[in-house]
Amino acid sequence: MRRLLVSGFTKTMPVVALVGLVLIILAIRFGSAKPPAPGGISFLEQIKLGGVQQWVSIRGADPHAPVLLFLHGGPGSASLAKLRQQTPELEQYFVVVNWDQLGAGKSTSLAFDYETLSIEQMVSDAHELVAYLKARFGVEKLYLMGFSWGTVIGLELTARYPQDFYAYISVSQLVFPAEGERLSLEFVRQAAQQAGNDQALAELAVIDPAYQGAGWQSQLGIERNWLVRYGGVYHTADSYNHEIWSLLRAQEYSVFDVCLWPLGSSRSLGQLWPEVMALDFFQNRSAIEIPVYFFVGRFDYNSPAELAEQYFQHLNAPMGKGLVWFENSAHDLFFDEPQKLVQETLAILESTR
Image 1 (cartoon, rainbow, N blue to C red):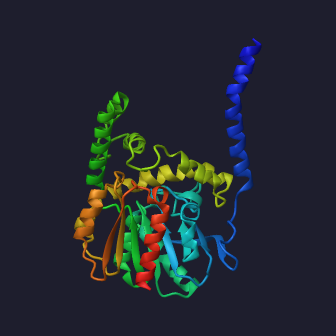
Image 2: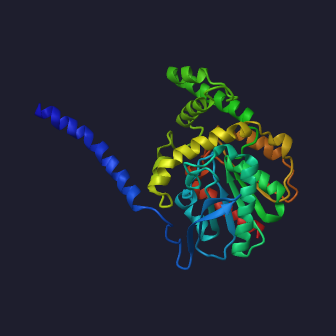
């Protein structure tokens, strides 16, 4: 009996320690992180966009540096801390602005009506934010960086308002999601077949890549879980664990924010995904009037790299365009190759000043 008690206690200790660590982390961190340099700035604040208070983080070593607005992925996968944690060097050269989009991250609440979300509303809110930042920092133009779902907003925003931007940096551009999801599912099924993974093959066999029927959100979750396992999301990780820990460590989020985060993500995705699946930028966005740069992960099957490359060749950009391959990355370049992403972004800054 004594041996069983000791054994049980020993097995329980890591769980207790983990829960305790999580509670400590949640208890001690909330608020703006300290500025990245003496004389720098670090603000965490609400701004009214589209008549609704939404959260932004504004950080930079030099408050007079060019402004870089970052549009996060998802829909709904907000992270005010992503660039601060993964590419902090950008804050030495830019005033970096992270925005939790309407209904996501800190910009959600239990009372929020998710049926009001639309791509058009997101683009309108982003345009208001750009106008606010131009006025606040006394600049005529900004740099814009979109990631994954954020590239939908980014492409629309820069196509409609080219006068507001020096350049558009697209990281893992969404192009034609209906075809992208077909390619993604094909890739992960082949990977499971090669691995002899009968469980994965059984779960993937019933998925419709159009994601239109009942239970589509659950099916998408299954596909993404296997996709991350087989390297289509990260090239240097096979789970989302680091994303969870990044959120828990982020000083920008309170305990309440962390608890609401999954709700905002799920509901944002549920409302916006049908619109996303109807997009086809090959047909609807053939030109952009500012310099545009595509950062593409060689192993990306979340937003398949082959579609991004095809669209880049299709896109008319008279002010110049560039395609940068990240040879050791999948979808999340910030995680797989953060230093290369910083270097390539600084090269764009140098060439467009």
